[in-house]
Image (cartoon, rainbow, N blue to C red; front, side):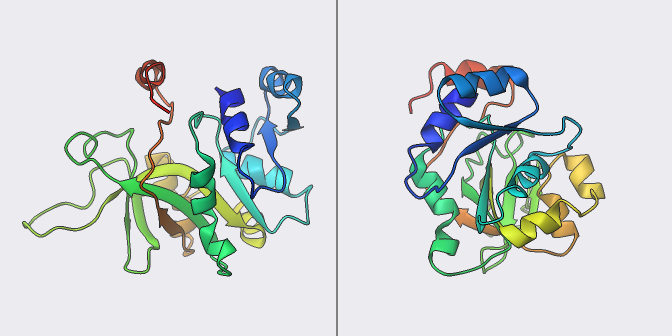
Length: 212
């Protein structure tokens, strides 16, 4: 799975470097055998973004760093390009992430489908495993299916790793909530493309028939 994630990411032409950050010798061996670059990290780091930050410290010339986790074997290069599109356009958000239109008929009540709502400037208001927003009236309001993929401005990533974990981050099990709880912003970049994250045995089974 990690090899597929790595190989699909390597097809993205805008990346200047691609590194697998891991505390697993098994994963390191898999990536090394296919000629990939690996950096070993502290197994006690609590989140993927902190693992990425630990490696990014060793590469001071990188201005924007992407956190692509190994449960995204079907990631498309175009999705990575969409993730960093604000930076390519000359903007400097602290952090960006991806989302697509939520299938409310099937995913709205699923804890495994993380929901995100945004303000009118496409900045995240909240991420949750619970259904959000609550539709008290018949009015419509947009809600998106979050993809756990992040890009950071380098200086903000270095700041992020120093921020203490926060209550909502802990109860929801969502590392990006730490950013919002400390008063920073996350730009949500919308994509029409969908992928299958593999977080559960059921999703692993789905991956066997996933049309990429």
